[in-house]
Image 1 (cartoon, rainbow, N blue to C red):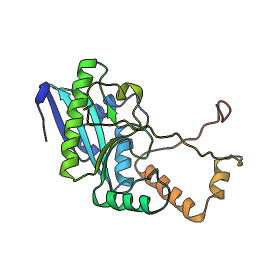
Image 2: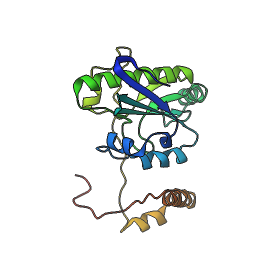
Image 3: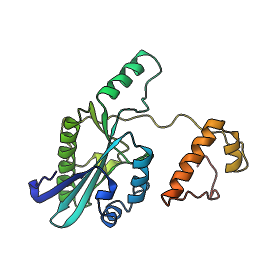
Image 4: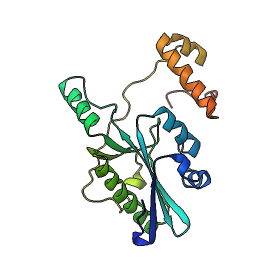
Amino acid sequence: MENRSRNLEVTVSHSAEAVDRGTWNVLTADRPFASHRWYSYGESVMADCLPLYVLVKQGNDPIALGTFWLQRREQLPLPRGIARWAVGVLIRRWPLLVCRSPLAEQPGVFLPQDPVLRRAALRAIVETAAVGAQHHQASFLAWYYLDGSDVSCEGWPESFDIVEMAGPRTYLHVEWDDFDGYLKNLSKRTRRSYRLNRNHARRLGLEVQSRPLSGPLDK
């Protein structure tokens, strides 16, 4: 699908492989958990979520990227009970279309720095995502983990609301000497899930490394 309004060309794809790897990595170079390889891995792990990638070009130059996932399951910030169950049923029937990086608490929209291009690219991504949400009968179109510069961009439509979620309220009491000790403390099922994901990552050429702490944990 293409949209040539405002001299911009917008292309939607459902696989990272449909987007040039070099182009992707240039647009997302300054963000963690945003590389082409990471998204390919995310697609394999989140196989039950349809990805929608919105690439924006000006002429032959790629300038922006929006990455969305059609999700029928989500960790809801609701206490267990009827309300949480009812919202879960709603999402399974009318899924969420969420802009985010897969498997990480990172945003999924990558915009140019130039204010004029930034505003036009965001509008193109929002309009395209809205069409996708309607096509897939999504209940909500949500943008997760946006930073201040993204939220303050003038390209957002007035119909969108900003919802601030509370930060993490849990902590892990570290009582192990190393990561292996932490793994041994996990349940048999969790250790098996860890091994499966680790082996899957290796097959995709991904490697997770541990590094010594450079300072206290509470900093």
